[in-house]
Image (cartoon, rainbow, N blue to C red):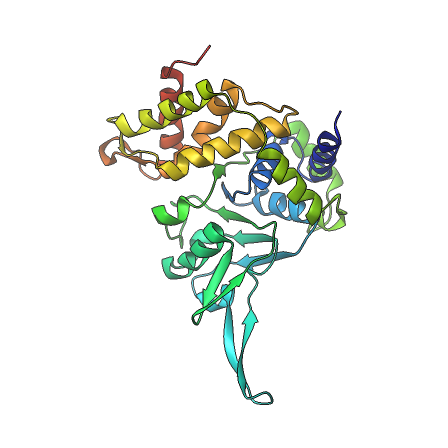
Length: 314
């Protein structure tokens, strides 16, 4: 076992001290982190979305800020504000909570589109611009957003430009009865992630991210990735296919997924496993085929069918 494998295993085991019975959700969260991506967790309330994000943040010796998104939240509440200092007789910028390594955007779809859009530059360029000045954000930088299904009251759908900034969208799902019993009998704290200790430093996370860049993807797999992308654009069921940004996201996510699983090379199963998670929130299902309130699940099911139809390279 390499040193990198030991670090990844230590991180996963630390998170799984709190998140019981969901090893794949934890693995996908770590994959997104090492791929320098952002993660959207969509599920019903009380399923552990916030706890998963908090557990990752507590496992890293990095800056962490939680932003509770509400209908009255303003962009300045996230980015910061410039105020006039009477003593120095000059304007000073007071950074907002976005200036941290791990950002938990809790219930992101409960705020207005104007406030949602304030995250676009930060998630894309790892910087924010306020009053004609640009301020870099710390590295590593990751936004983990949670959202409730759109049929819940008081939610605003995320625009396509915002969704496209997230590398993956996952669901945690209900725990198995045996795992739920463990949760009920052992986790008596209001915030069970509060007792976790960091197992990785910011520098170690950056080193792992750099190592992911060297994971090999053969030319045949790149062609397979492009075929999967083309299938979304040519499908009559989808009104909007995957953009080049989405294809790049799948490429990087596959490298990180292989790395998390202890390999220095990608295999077709990496792309098959991740394509629905990376592509589903980037496509639009034709309205006449969409089940009311189930757009995300419809897209994932359609993409799973498309993936099964594209020939796998030998």
